[in-house]
Image (cartoon, rainbow, N blue to C red; front, side, top):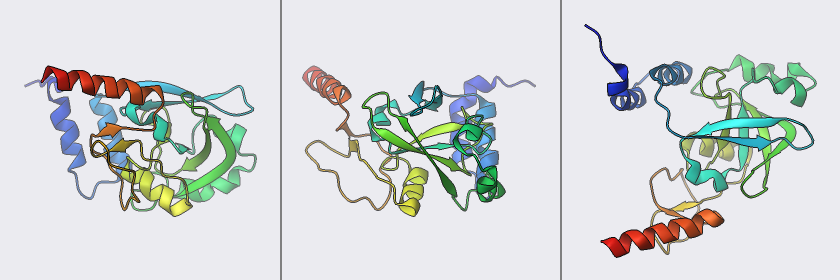
Amino acid sequence: MVFRITHYAEELLRGCDELRGWPERVVLMQKNWIGKGEGVEVDFPLEGMNEKLRIFTTRPDTLFGVTFMCIAPEHPVVRQLITDLDTIKDVKAKYGRETEKIGLFTGHYCVNPLNGDRIPVYIANFVLMEYGTGAIMSVPAHDQRDFEFAKKYGLPIKMVILPQAHSSPAELSEAYEEEGILVDSGQLTAWAARVRKRDNSVH
């Protein structure tokens, strides 16, 4: 008997999220094997270098909420960012561990191509070269893993999606990962408002 995995991708991905006791690295590799990824690739130029960090995201609506970048210890650009590779031994020792999130600030910044914000670049043990591009944009207001990392290292948390219209960004006790109203996102905010107005007029 042969199954066409593409017909069951969504169900399989939901099943991965329900796995208990599996290492995060294994779960991510399993998701990658399923091969279901809908999103966009975005290049974040590295300051003072002729290099870019390419990320893949399924949440382009949160691009204006990026406050730091994380890359895998094995990312090819690491050798250009860190001169003393011994400094990342601790990160490598805990590579792929779900229970403890370890990061090392590289001293370098990349630039958000949408708003020009300077984004600090960290090497992190939970970013895997086997999944995606080996680099992730981190949006702590809207991703729980990023939220915990930001709290640990004192990094900014910028909310760009609110639960409902006319509400105000609040002090978060955890990431807000649901759908909502796009705010503080430049031209995207105006575009989203037009779409809401159009949809409301239709109904």
